[in-house]
Length: 88
Image (cartoon, rainbow, N blue to C red; front, side, top):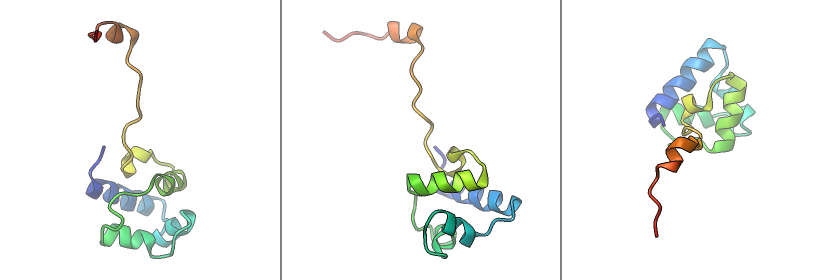
């Protein structure tokens, strides 16, 4: 997972690439117009809530992980799982 500063930088760069304002992102996320300005400049909130992050990722057409989402859980290949020790 990216640190909070990297997620903020990615958001600002991607929004600039698409000529999308921070106030527009706030509107898309259903927040007050200053929400993303405060997120970027003051670091509040520290981490975007999942629903807000998803809405913004969709608007910016970008991977949520670039905005601070953790990597998704992926099942272990059967060969690896078979080699795990069994308790008992």
